Amino acid sequence: MLKSFLKLFTAITILMVIISCSADADSESLVAGEDFTGTNIRVLSIDTFEVRLSTMKFDSITTSTSGRLLIGQYNDDDMGLITTSTNVQLSPSAYYLDNDAVLDSVGLVLGYDTYYYNDTTQVATLNIHKLTDKMTTDDTYFYNTTETSYEETPLLTKSYYPSPSKDSLFITLPYSFGEELFNDIRENIITDQESLYQMLKGFTIMPSNADDGSIIGFSTDSDSSYLRFYYTIPDELETDEYTYDMTINTYYNHIESDVTGLPLEDITDQEFNLTSTESGNISYNQAGTGYVTRIEFPTIKDLYNIGSEGTILDATLYIEPNTLSHSDIQPLSETLLLYTIDQNNDLASQISNSVDVVTATTTNEDSEFNQVAFTVPVIDFIDLKLNESPITEDALIMIPTDYNSTVNKIIFNDSQRSNFNTKLVITYAVYE
Image (cartoon, rainbow, N blue to C red):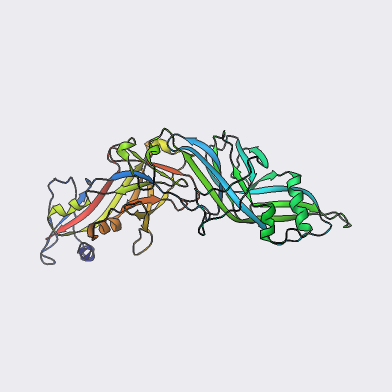
């Protein structure tokens, strides 16, 4: 019934009086014309519904389908120590080398994919370890919590200044490592993927424990990141240099956050909700680590207390990110997707309407003071909550499209901290 009036209401031209009011404020009436409907219409703009924010954390998120390798470490005032390492499995397109081929050198090429987060002016470290076990999973995916054992001593350690705008990073590997693999392929000892894994199960590439700089994104594409062998065939009249590549066939990113001493330390499992009142009137979102802000509207059914039949014309959530929590090196995600989660904080469904999926976008509320807000169309979710039977404890969350391939954070101010810039505004037409 709430939506049935909307088409009739918008099909005619009437003078609307929008009244911003509190729950107990008086409202005015507008006569649409007795000849047409014989109905008094009041259009109310109500912004006094409670917006309850809390932070939860997914037990795990998929990181093996993102198309990006994440490597690095930095210390964050809000989110703690963020560490990302990547695990890769390799294979060639063919298990063949000329009988006279001689290895010249071997190196790992990591192609930048332009993504970075935090300070790239700091020196970063890559520790490359050989895996001691094959990468395995109980299903078809690997997660940010997946671990694969590796040799304690790194095959190689390289320090570098990240340059995300450049093409790639080249890392020369020990000749003895490459020679053994190269010769085994040439001599038909390695002839398929299984025999390759007996010699090389893969790599884990991780930062140094002392790093405090940035997280860098590298591509998984076969023409961007690969293990390359350079070789020659001496018997040829002209000694040309050839290459033999192994490309990434399986990968995942292991992502950790050490939140010791921070409010987030209280979140011990996925079902725990850290309310914004328990964390300084803020809530947390961070891609990669699994933190997300849970949004609830516990007083939404107070709309029925108006006492007259009506329809929701619009419902918009305005939610303010903390100004100090984003910068040029820690940018905000400008578009967020809307999902519902159930009472156990399990993902339920994505919010969509008749046209497309629903998104939250940023708007500049006050450019002079760098005040930004996310504008979130929530009419579909509000309708769901008003009409659901039985009543559930579903809540709303917002995550970026690259939630499993970045570590971008968003710190939200709740209504109290934002001076009520974080609010739900419902435009409601009452008719009799």
